[in-house]
Amino acid sequence: MRMVRTWRLLGLLLVLALVGAACGGAEEDTTSAGEAAAAQAQAAAAQAEASAAKAEADAAAAALATAQAELEAAQAAAASAMEGDEASQAALAEAEAALAEAEQMAAEQAAAAAASKGTIAFSFGNEGAGIYRLVADPARIEAERRGYDWVEGSANGDCEKQVQDIEGFVAAGVSAIVFLPLCGIEPYLPVVQAAKDAGIVVVGYSTAVPGGDSSIVYANIDGARAVAAEALRWLEEDFTGDPETFSWALFTFDQCGRACTDRTDPIRQVITEATGVPPLEAESVAEATGLEATETFLQADPGLNMVIGINDGGALGAYQAFVVQIEQDGRDPGEIFVGGMDGQNEALELLAGADEYGIYRVSGAIIIDQLGKAVADLPANILEGQPPTSLVLNYVAITPGMAHFAQQVLDNYAEFLG
Image (cartoon, rainbow, N blue to C red):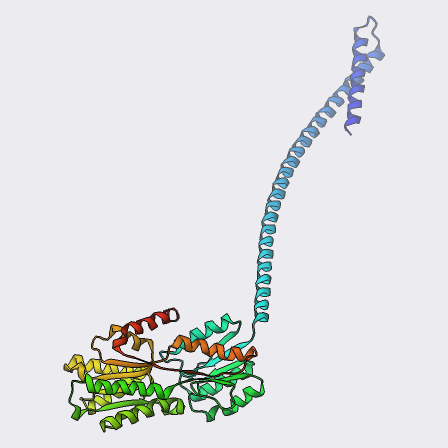
């Protein structure tokens, strides 16, 4: 289009040149005048066309500027889009890395599960007892060290719940079960048989279980006699009260069978024969019930001199009741003897020097972290093909005169109490 217009302009300029030459000559005629008029008309038309062409060129320049602006905007949008794409790519890369990490963790967990030798389950039956963590935590640590998973029951003193816990262990297909028969042997015989039918190792804790593979038992009779001997020694050497009015109480818990009665029967027998005084009795294995029972005894007999518990838990409740009597009534601490069994940490603290009045006088203690280790080792040994063996644990009668030893035991327990 522009080429055609250019040629037209050249043609018009040529015509104008010819017209100028004709007007400058010596000879004029009518024909030349007409041609000149026509040329002028063509020139005017050419000028008008040139003006139109200029307007079109100006419009084209404006369109070009608009196009350039649009291009620049498009380039900016493209750059922005590229930046967004880079952000998306970075987010995608992060997501892919997180996925890879999760896959690796899952693989590690699967490998760990595959590497586990099995599961050891433990039902103490009275998980609220003060010594429980001192037994269960060392057992868990030892089981995990040897490559076994570890699970615990939660009966908290409920016999039926303990049976249900053990049934759950069997249903879950654990490798071994260690349990203290909280309610005697009979209620557990069916579930023990179910465990044996399933090929599960069964270890009795505190009591040998009929049909079980092994057992961890205490030398209860010897331990009880040691506590009774310390009580009689105190009566003969340190008692500041009147022997003629001596009275005492015994906390029992017969529902667990011989594991319990072997602790209390010798104490009852030895002290009754030596003093001629039978004990007041109540069931207690916890501080709250021991406190309540002792308060009741003191209401009936404010001169009660001695309370011995089947464990330290109940005896610690008796200790609290006597402290109140000393502080409120001014009772002579030399007339009071409190003792228990197990070596519970709170009792050991009193024996190590925390007892302001010195009335907590003995704990027949099992060295409990060793016991906990055995809870894992005995079933693990059987699972790994060693001949079944049973373990008998002896008591140490810890007294205030053994404060340094009591503190050593506490220090040894510290890692499990933290």
